[in-house]
Amino acid sequence: VASLAGQEAKVGWLAYLTFAGALAASFAGIGFGWLSDRMASRLPLVIAGLLTLTEGAQRLRDEQELRTRQTATLLAGRVDQLMASAERLAGMIAAAPMAQVALRLHLHHEVPPNEPLAQLDALGGEWLVLVRSFPEVDQVRLLDPQGRVVQSHPPRANSETLLRPPPQRGGHHWLAREGSGSVDIWTEVPGGAGWVSVGLSASAVARALAGR
Image (cartoon, rainbow, N blue to C red; front, side):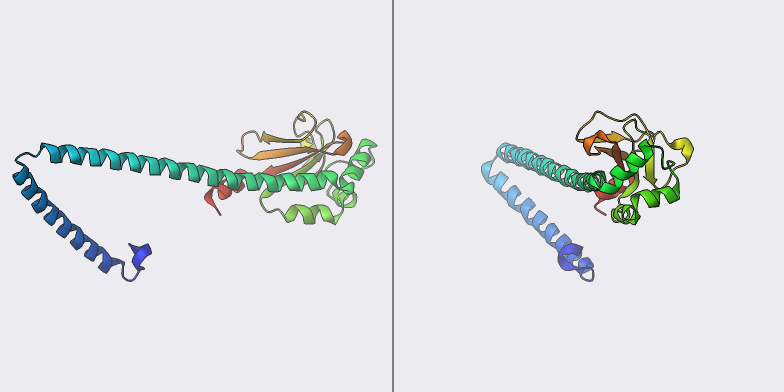
């Protein structure tokens, strides 16, 4: 009622609708009573009422199923957009020359892993600018072929350099982050030089489902 008549008029319109419903019920009772007296039997009217109720209930179920499917499609689309955004970020970092330079330096042990200054020197300020332009992402990792963290945002301690065993080579791989409800996408750096892992927090997925 408020959406149709506005917040200020909703009480008045509710009273009008209630009064109209009471009048309709009264006239319907009188009319069907008169009709049943003329027919000398109420059975046809009872059967007609049951059929009408059955048809209305089935129509209501169909509408509810349709709305459920539409809602599921809408939520799936929001999550797909979120995942596509993370895949784009992972692909841009994997294809960037700065990532391959950092992996080569790590391979030749020229840059200590997870050193904040080394991250900036090896990857450049574009790394942080690019990552921060995707607010739904909570972490980004550049890893060697064995799954060891070479660079990360935010930085990790040296004791956490091993993230997890890498997936099979090729394409995008979505992996659940253990014990957090978050997910990470792994994208292979061209040439098999390493991996880029982009994480979506559980709160970001929840916000996408809520439409915020």
